[in-house]
Image (cartoon, rainbow, N blue to C red; front, side, top):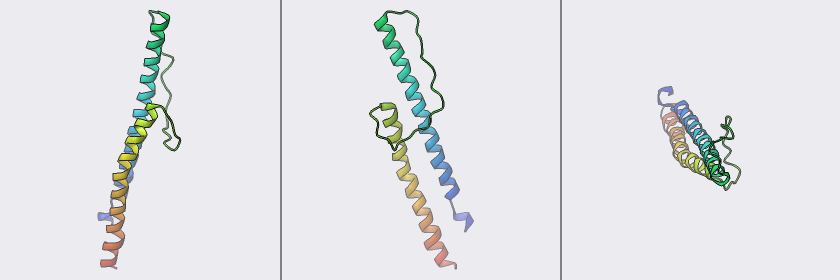
Length: 105
């Protein structure tokens, strides 16, 4: 029974998905800061580029509605990937619990 259980592998796939979208979220925040810094240099005419700071560790929260692209993009990717991961989890449980357990009590 344990040889057919992919629950841990699917859990790690879900964690991989969450880690990747957190990285995309961080890169989005960083690129937003770079663009804002470049725009302020153009407006002020300052020749020295100043970055207001590299973002700290981020934790993406997709439960809140946001109009910022660096939140909407990673959340859309996260939920799209979660559809397939959750379908694989359901199929794993269906095969493991219903088919295998009922065939070999």
